[in-house]
Length: 51
Image 1: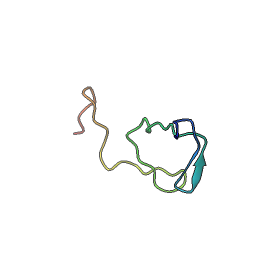
Image 2: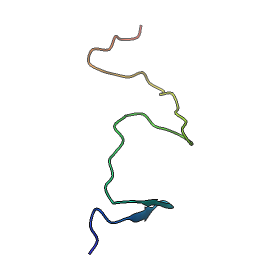
Image 3: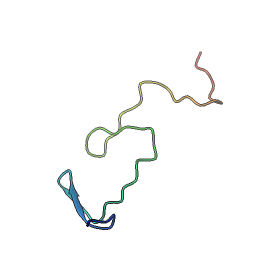
């Protein structure tokens, strides 16, 4: 029986265990280490409205 602490190969990479955490961001990255600017400004309840 496998456990959460057993290694796994995923996407061609060998991971030391099966525990993963989702990214804690709303940004998206494209390509190796590159980020792309958002097409819309960030929206928060206290953000000023663009004129």
